[in-house]
Length: 232
Image (cartoon, rainbow, N blue to C red; front, side, top):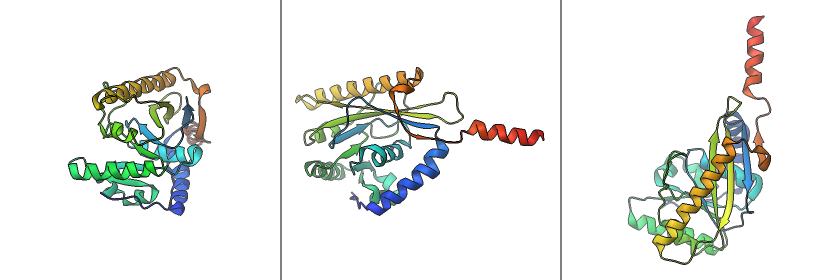
């Protein structure tokens, strides 16, 4: 496995680039709704898009400020090795030895009081896919965490040419049962949150959300200017 090589300067520089050059160009709004205020611990997120990791990093830099570690697939970290400077460490799910090393590394970070992000679905799955399929590593790490928070994203097109991203989070208490029962509990909790944020997006319940980032000059405005210029 590849360990994280966190660098504050790299985090600050990348966040500025991410926010101004990527997120503002690709999305209309990033919306955030905490049912409970996340505290440092294990952070478990749904994984419906490649953007999820970038959005989480933006959320932490903008609001949470927890300086987390993030478990990502080994192939992804090899493709983007710079991410190790942002707190990413790898996991190779094809190697049992590597899985154990990655989980123990994450456990050590939790025991030190750091936050650890992971995507228990293990890979990107469509946001409408049900039932959710979660790996057991999340419940293993939950035993070492002071708290467990779950996060869900929903990417939604509405009245703009770019999508909104709805982020909703809440804390959960995983019962001290057998691993299989804990996985069932976690699956049900993450499914409920996924469905809740989906309902928020469908009903356009924007008032319940904090706007983290919003495009100041929506694409329709630029399109209208271009059309007016063409008519002249």
